[in-house]
Image (cartoon, rainbow, N blue to C red; front, side):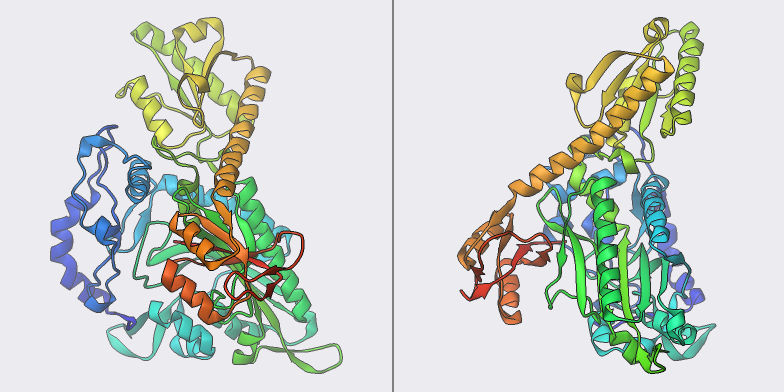
Length: 554
């Protein structure tokens, strides 16, 4: 596939103004009534036909592209009925994201962006604790930079978006819209690094990335997405390796402790290694449909980029040496992972640690003379919980019934709901419901409004929900990983939609054969390997010291 040519703004506006005008009402119209669903997101909507070249059109799954229009009063598609439709319904109904005007792109709405901010808040602290500083590199990269590292240009060329015209004139050199930043980082590192005293150099940037993906899915794979990318330079291979492993550990802890996603950390196979890296480490998560999601990566780049760009330093002995480097990243695809790991038929289910709203308070009254007392109690409870560091929202709108509000906030995935009515005000208590335990089982009456009791109870329940979501995800993951010892057993496990874990020491050709025949790839060689004697490779029968995990993936 050729790279996309981005033309001048005037020509784009001129050619698309008619289409935008005719579509504007349908693009931006919204329904917010429970039972009247917002305009549905579909894979067909997110997979685009370029306005510039038809041959760069992202492709769609025929099953999704040809599906009949959904009946609007049907609500969220059941997860077990159609996982992909359910996922898109949740994104739309929970107001996480919407279509961008360029198909294959998305607009992240405030509630979705608030989840991304929670991810940023945690990781920013960890990055700085481990000695990294935030900075920013330009979005436009000279094409010659991409060409300097052979495997890098080969790996990214099909996904590049190129700018060929600027200011109405043909550019002397094509510019790449940032697909990743290793090349431009090395260009700058070469100017900043001169001596061993300048090392290690460790930076991170929060930025957007453009990759012309052929199959798109909101949050998981879009033409443009948000991420952080860390870049470091070191004096020795050992320091770079330590850094790469340290950062994948940071991601692993985030996944477990904040997102409640029990990822499996490990090393990628040679075929799955990042273009231009010596080693790639990954965290792999099992989604609700049992597909794997690569949730974060950390690369030991060796000296591949420093040799291509001449990034050198003078060591303590006065000798010129090439630096050793790493890069590592997580992106907004983590939000997709959270949705697909924890959500249910009612909608989104958010771990309290990353929920934009941890507690929603729904005041309930029937008569006008009850309104003031109930609202004052709700606001008082909010103040108490907010002071304790809990993120709280009071839904005091008059336009909706309490039942509508219950369903709405459950669909938004808020971990706890507090109900306050006239009788609760009189008794000085509240009713509290858990999002992760539906129905009467998750509802507790008569929790005292007394500050110390209420705060302790709410914090305890938020901790329980966080632990419960992680525990469920671990049980689901472990029950869907099958240990295999032969290729036939591997094919059977993948055929059942499960992950296959087995001894592996076969060739790249054998790995490609597995992919071609089953649709599964090696997700990683887990850091945690089973103890015991050396086993035989499931493909060749030769001794194999490691097991690999195979799965179909996003």
